[in-house]
Length: 226
Image (tube, rainbow, N blue to C red; front, side, top):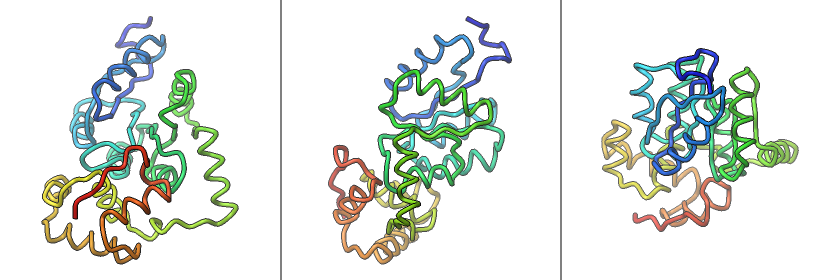
């Protein structure tokens, strides 16, 4: 294996709130001769803080990361560190999330159920300047374009989408306001606008609509208190 300081290695940061997943991925990646995991983060905020002192080539970012969420994390990384490539990872392979993450700056989008070899291939491709999308996800995006399908979530602004995703994760208004540096009143205003644009009247309806349009995994969905 090459020395960890060898510049020919692909320097990788892992961003996932689950330590067990990060450690498993790090073990697999560090076994590769041309890759080195140089940092791990459990939230978007932690990742951005680490980027003040280290510069990875590739960031592997879980789409449903806690805190500010995958979309804003990707946007801020690309805005503040445009040279870093982002590989978005998610169990959500259809609906609006793949397109949103790609627009936010991800260079690749892979499903959490891909093989190890496909994950490593995605990292190498984005590092070489190419894009990569898991074949099934690419097919879904292509079908959506051909059929001109439009999700109601496409009507939400980036901030509204971010708040909606945090609501779907059962985060309370005070928690959301703290993490986004907004007042609780502003968060309630966003929640009202989200419901108005989507034609909803409760958080439960938001969850049902999110599952229907591939924004949330039905197996992981939890009831959200109003």
